[in-house]
Amino acid sequence: MQSTSITPLHTYPILSHFHSINLNSNNKNKKSLKLSLRTSKCCCFTLSSTHSCSKDQEKPQNNSYSIDPDRQKDRIINWEEFYSSIQEQEERTQCNEEEEEEPEFELPDHSGIRTNMWWTDLKAALGQRINVEGIVSSLGVFSKDKHLAIPHVSVPDIRYIDWAELKKRGFEGVVFDKDNTITVPYSLSLWSPLASSIDQCKSLFGNNIAVYSNSAGLDEYDPDGRKARILERAIGIKVIKHGVKKPAGTAEEIEKQFGCESSRLIMVGDRPFTDIVYGNRNGFLTILTEPLSCAEEPLIVQQVRVLEVALVNRWSRQGMKPTTHTLLPDCQQCVKDDPL
Image (tube, rainbow, N blue to C red):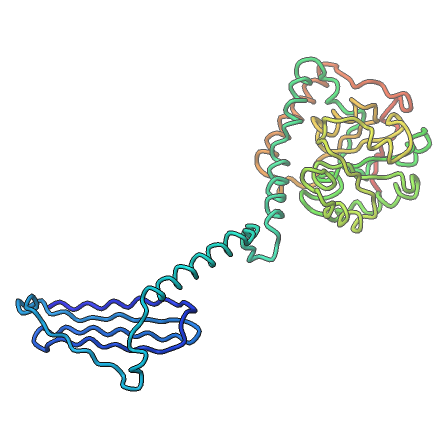
């Protein structure tokens, strides 16, 4: 014996009566059909059947109908009107759906952070690992401009810089790189041992101090300036927004910020092929510092740094020197023996 039950459910606003029709067959073939229609503001109908797979099922049967006596006047259902109303309702629903504007698709954001934020952060992280502008510039340095990667001054960190001597020589401002120059990589706060040197620099140069970084303030990776503002509040130094990564680009934005030519400014950074090449190409006095911490740097950045330093040391041993700066012919005069 096989039993089947089919229960489709549909809702349509068509009639205002309740109809019940029971179709009962002979008990021998155990087949029954019940159709219920209930519509006040909607119509709901249920079709259920039980079948017996006996040979008697094929015999002719006399069906009996049982209708609610209180509903004798409504025993006849206008099926044409019924299906017509269904078709009209479906057409109206389809038209309404076509008229509605499709909602803007947004990825679910369970973390509470806008979806474009994680993509921006990812690009920033990748950008600090792969500097396309730096790679292109390096090709030119290797071929004909090796002297651009050699700094005027090399110090362990900014505590060894004699800011007073530089001010006396006629320099008007200082531009710092961020990561591994005044902060550890990806940090937005000053490395605390450098606080006294930064304070001395501020006392001499006033507001003519700024950060020019390939992370905070760069349009591509800090489009809303959020990282730049956080860094400014933390260290009290202006962050210059710019659109091109070092070493590419000109000094136009920096000169506009300081109100003087780049030849009267100092560029301080930890990367020969980015900070130093950019500074020398645009006429700055360039000071190379050792990295504050390599532990937080990605492996590829550490490897590139080792290669850069090895090349600069090799070229320096070969007698290659940077272009002489007019304000400081003897660059070692601005280096302290004791950082205190």
